[in-house]
Length: 461
Image (cartoon, rainbow, N blue to C red; front, side, top):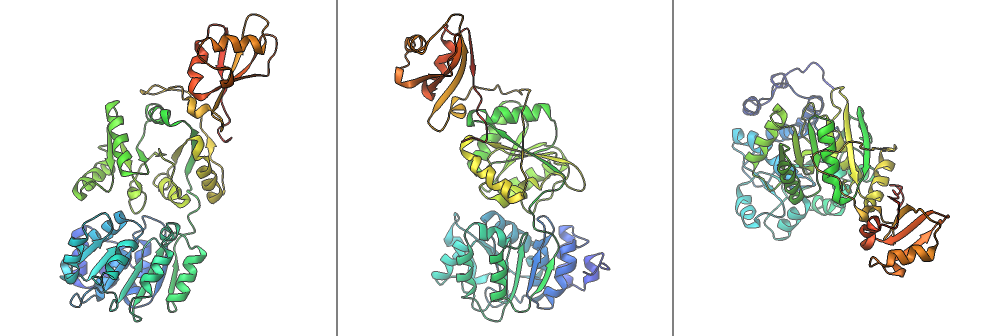
């Protein structure tokens, strides 16, 4: 690592590249850029293990634009796991490319393939997802047999998403004489094997340990039914003021949740892939500057975006991939500051929580919220039922009772004998199990002097 480099001007870069970096507002390279740009420009295959938000995108774009010619078809391909990242990479590439007279293009599913086909002939750099890249290659529209640069961005996440075979299919159909650059936050065995098979004496730069924990982040989970997720979030927002980044798993629900929060008086903004780039940039700038304190986002914000002073990360939807959990909560607790991560987990999602805890080699603390927020809490019998769909109540009466007597009193309220079970009966107390669909009737039966819903162990299926 060359620690003498303080600014991009010290790196002997092309004037066109330096002009682009100045226009973007970049003056000094990050650690990953200091370490990797020079060996990449020299033509070495490189493997870089670096944390998210470390500046890795420009660490491969700068060397590419230092050497790209821009006059003989596609010369560089950058594979990304998601369309959002492909768009993000291409946006940054276009900022440098325009100074070099080089055209760039993002290709991904869910967008017009005709537009992509029409623009490929004049494109020199492509950022794309494996599926659409393969589609265009099979159609004969995307030719990679003369490329000089092959970049795998977020290789570990592509492995998690099942893209390994696709990557090998693509790379096996590229030119033999190419430079490979692989970037990953972690180094699973399959990524190491891939590197050994296709890379030639690569320069290895390990700038971070495997991201299996987030230092400085207090991690909690809340066991909650779907009906009360908004209530739990409201309690956090009202009782623990701060700067909140809230994650949902889908673009649609990101918008829905943000709208619901606004209806309850919270100033919330959504950010997801269906928004225009200008709208997303405007929202992120407001969040960074402190004009808004609640951002509801998909995973598009969990990687490569560095926002200071986020106090809380809330997983409104638990992530399906364990590494996404770490990337999400890593948005808080930065620069030595403390942060708090709260994951909302329904009973049928506990297996995902188990996997996360196994991955980070730690247990999340169960968080009990004592105070409600603006959104009232509801009794959610779905959440309190067992795997057989039964809800348990503990009761007391003012006279000696029996299973027969309890059953008769309950049946008068439209509950059949085969929909209940009386158990743990003593003289004037006991428990009654009832099918979930009839649970709301039990507290209304005046035969019971006291009736209490039995809370289930949140970790018990």
